Length: 317
Figure: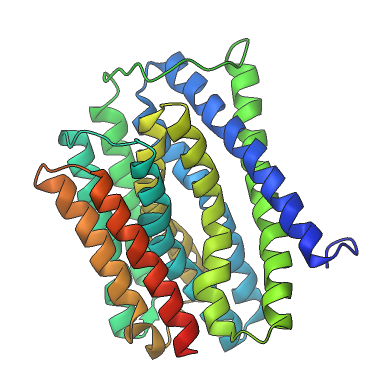
């Protein structure tokens, strides 16, 4: 327990922090985008996506510091499960709430990057390890892509809503950074409280990684995405999800592999989880690439699929 608080209280506190943090991140990003004349999609794919991947990075680095196989499996499961939840749960909710986006050139490029990131983690799973050299290559590739989109999309403009934050960049930056801290610590509280509840019920640790830890580390994306969707800021909602999945693999696991000299990946992920990730990410990317876009029926289909996947994990345990 954190500060002697019961697990249930930690869950509630975490939820409150995530709600307020998500609002601050969205409002801050809108203000930043307006100041620099950047589309909110670009801000969502970069700043917001990286910021909301901080919980995953914290879990991975914490696991590596412990050095046990169980903790590493938990962390890897958290990243794999988080990417699955981002696509099948968070994106589905965003689509159902109306945060659709036309499959223009920019969105197609980001969908391709999502496929690249998914291919990287698939390859690492087949190898049984995320080696340091792959981590270095991934970080360089992500950095090059971010540089490319910053250069090619700097003249894009978007009018996706006005922020209620007063003042200029100073207050917007404080709101943005403060919001990231709130979603980070909110996630910590939710994970801590949720793990305590799950362990007390005798749920296997591997299932905790793929479900509870994954869901907990996806809560920042969920909080930001729902807030952005309800406010009609579609660029932040969609960009946050795609960018976060890219960052989880190309930055989070990559940094972890470099710090730890490689990350071992257990064969158990080959049974179901990696294929669910490949199928869901591939479905979303292909829907964007072939020009169909993201429809509400697709969102409903993936949401049902995610529920079936979670049930299968618990039944199979």
